[in-house]
Length: 413
Length: 153
Image (cartoon, rainbow over all chains, first blue to last red; front, side, top):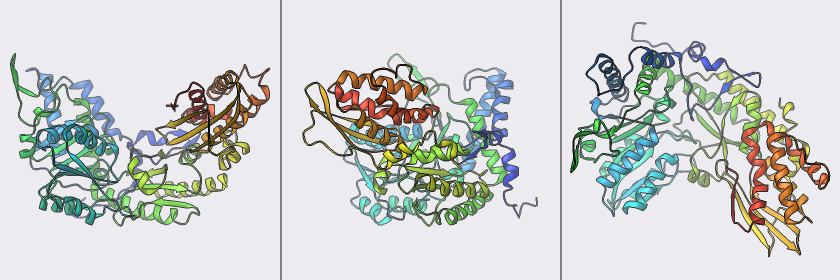
């Protein structure tokens, strides 16, 4: 490779890197269309985690012995890798958490109770995952913060005019919205949202749990204040998530969890917190998981986010064309800018019956409300099925989904 | 493509799922309860009218998958005329049948009723769907105990 031209993604080669994809389900080849819930893991991630435990594992930031130093170096190298992946300037702005959920709860507790004042407001959108909804409801109840909910248009896009109206009185301290909807596939205009929020004196948090998997993310270019994502959707392990925040914000925030590693000094009378990022990483962190996340970032970077994005764009166009001609099938959300997540309803067939049928022929989709109940009320469906793509998803799998949906329609009528 | 699913989705299930019987409210029910499967969104409200010590009328309203709707529909048909003790007994046998596919106690008394409910026994091969079939019966037990909210989580 000469560096100027990046070849497209060779999906068959990529698939060979994921051992689980050769699994059979009910005797049929697995068609895994639930990567939006959790992605499968490439061999490189599995190997890196195993190798770490076999050769260089010890607790971090503790011992002055060789293994602890090696382990600490690996953990901190993962932090550097995440910072590069997000376009962050300073690796200390990367906090490791257990999940996106915990990262948002960290901000809701620490920034929400420590920096925001009663009488201020937080804005979320109607299409948030419960992880970016309930923590703000809890903050609202506990700390006198008003929770405002920006509307979603019928197209599945964020209603920017409504967002602006909800910012107008200047009371909003934080706008917390998704970068990509886990139900609608909608990619939100994060740079515009950040500019709008900042113009009204509010900070922004973006939930990148879905987006980082599909797009190159640059937290400085979009002018984010906080950005969160999780390892397991990015082909990495469960048990590790990331909070990125601007240093001056993190610096001013009180600690979230108390314990070992987050202190500079403890006396009988009190404690002095450690500087960022240790201040927010109480207790033994997810060390092996950090190494796995580092391997996952190296893996996707090796394939190239641009190549992954181009492959998924092609899949999205193909899926739209295939699904839109199926009789009685409603695809929920028609945003112009969307990623590889499709929620749909098939006539009167219930999502759970439909997913049971699809499972029988090897197709794994999610059914239910996808941790987004308020959105399901908005779109008027009690539950939907959701097919979500990964870099290993093929056009043939989309064809097979369409064929199965056609058969299912006949089964239920 | 889905022929081997006909054991689960027998014609009687699809029929009751599409056109649930006794799908209405009772104006003055003696006992009611709500049933909820929070994970999947199945919801129902059950109404019982009593005459003496027997269930004179049973009706429900709700939303859910074919299995849960068919199960509720068949339940309202089969518990009518039964005493609360008989209905609880049927609920216990039904749960056993939904979880194991077999019902060793289903002969003898209430045999005809349990025979009809046998249509739902295929659900035992689908562990994640068992709760769809049992929701109605959980709700029935709750109503008979004078409770208000049932959940089959």
